Image (cartoon, rainbow, N blue to C red):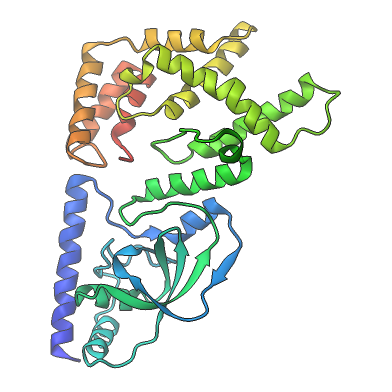
Length: 333
């Protein structure tokens, strides 16, 4: 085996260990993004293969099909990667032998390796900026970027699927719906399905109501009034790091629960007012707020090591709403 190639592999393995250690200490994600997680959310079937290989930037390769745990986010090899295979590719690359193009899926502005993870790893370790690839483009309008975490990538994929299903971007312009955790847009689709069902009940004489029509009515008659109430009563100040859409989910569930309990309709302002009263400032919440701000300013994706357990206990002591106020020890920033 080529001695220099083996030495480069050991150096790359060492870098992977250092990156994983930093990841554990800071809470930053260092895994590649699994293509399967994005593809499942997008539910896109149209694939557009490019006719000939092209050079793509290595820094825009952010994920892998099936092998996302074998390499760090910068494609440094972890323990599961065999030295023989990696070093043989490295030796061939440094002898300027021709290597076949890798195969990638393109989603937005980033790429996922279908075949060629080792070649990407070797190229990154050797300081290359680009690599030849056979590109298959996934025809979806999603703005994935190289620095996105897995949660951020999933949220963007969910948003693209939501807009494709509802056509709300075309019907209502800029929506301003943003979530800090995956799952939000999936919940909104379910809210629209329920809203459409009640529209049919309220208007039995109407022709079939399309999902797009129900989505527009839900946005104007349900979502916007609740968000307006949240903003009017400054509820976001009680939940640092959260968005109006995050709180919409919580408030809408509260409205539904109160309606079941009381048997009467509860207005958005009433529900938000109750939530504001329940989350009025306390010493505990001030501490949680300060910790949340600390992690935000530190640019971390999680509460610092040693603090998460304390936050969890504090959240239990303060009741279920404190977990929301504390960000539940995790942020998608």
